[in-house]
Image (cartoon, rainbow, N blue to C red; front, side, top):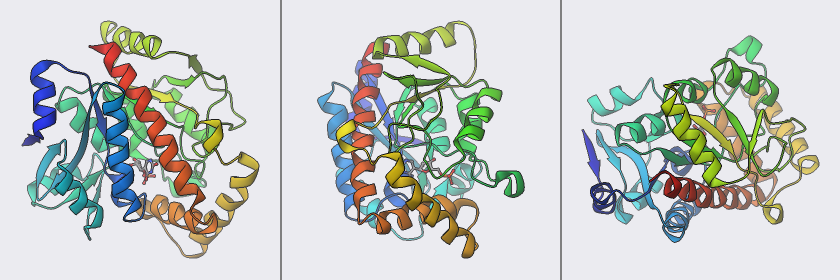
Length: 298
Ligand code: PSU
């Protein structure tokens, strides 16, 4: 059921380091054409850092691990693309539909393909008001059960970050900040929260991944890599924008899977595109670190 691009098939045959990349960020996280340009730039960043990129998506019911340029271009403009998490993956495949994989579904496909490292922007988490809505991203459960190291710039600042950390702790997920003590918050380096763990090098992160496997611990690791200082939108600047977008979502009754894409789109408009520039910069930064970790792991 899994199709590998020629580049990924060759990398698998030769045992080269591979980095999984998701596709929801392309279809539901960024506007066209910047989404396709960003996806290509992220793949190029993985290659430049000495690993092979494997962008994952479901096209007409087939799971693709590694997309050709034409497939990427098509997906970036496609309409009615499903947003796939663990719950939706099998129905999408069984009914021959097209779907973009979230962090959760990308982790599942990466593990099936034997890929140990995955780079994205920001994971989903516990939404504000979850005590009433119960809206908690399936990304968290997936990190608790699937053995992939996920490199992100933290959980998105639209979330309830303290509750997200609590749930990750309950699920036994190591949350590791890179090069600083504080948990990064996607567009900003600071969150006001101390990260539970800190490691400073790709070699240390790879060693922790191997040690979890050796101990028989199930689940992955969440590596939170702060956005480069030159690209960040400081917390004091972005948080009022986030609050306004959250109020708008509530007023319009946006719920479930639609929440995150709605908020990202509103924040993009309110910052006149600056949030997108920062988002692309942080994904590129995560791709480079993920490639280094993948190289350490082979
Ligand atoms: N990183 C980004 N932009 C995104 C995402 C990650 O920079 O849009 C996607 C991921 O696919 C993640 C999803 O799994 O957002 C979270 O969606 P939700 O909050 O509905 O679980």
